Image (cartoon, rainbow, N blue to C red; front, side, top):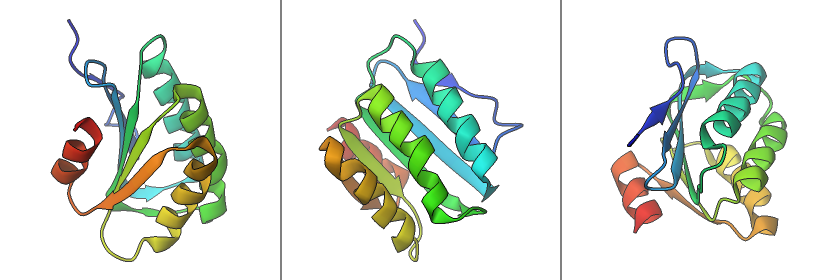
Length: 130
């Protein structure tokens, strides 16, 4: 049985990972993330999660910086939230990313998704899976 599915990290600024047994999808960002990277991550999430139950999402942006206006995060993130019916979302980042967290909170509020920010992916996983 597959425990972990992953997109092709050698090509992507956003590595999309799915843990089907845990119902967790993760977006691990590195380098400068562009609007095209966001769209590609949305497509990868749909492909990996097809036919699976996904309840939680983690966005790890510690090793990246946005190369797009923050407003451009809205469309691809909304699509993932709605398509996968996410219930919990963890945002892992360094300090100073308040504008991205505010955008995530704005997008998740109408969908009743619980959101929390974390400094480490281990803390985020505990909250998402606990």
